[in-house]
Amino acid sequence: MMKETGLQRSLILATLLLLLAGHPNVFAFDLFDLLADGDDVLRAEYRMDEYDSHPNELANRTIGPLFADFIDQAVRSYTPR
Image (cartoon, rainbow, N blue to C red):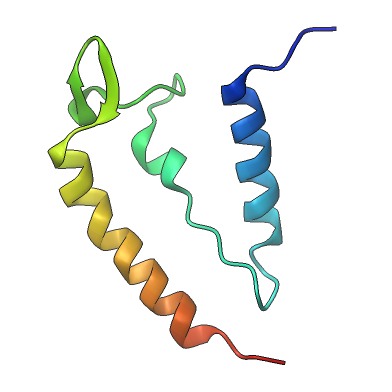
């Protein structure tokens, strides 16, 4: 049996959260799919350089507003039981 990596565990958790995202008190923003390319690594345009895997300013400016809108919609659509 292969040992799971941190990335694999993160992807499993993200998938589970997205599956739960239809419940009234669960909201999941799929940041990974917005940042990653088809090889599951940070998109080239969002990298600082080839050695730094942290998102750059372009990623923040592009995805930040989407995340803010997501939070706004989650707050507005939440209905307490």
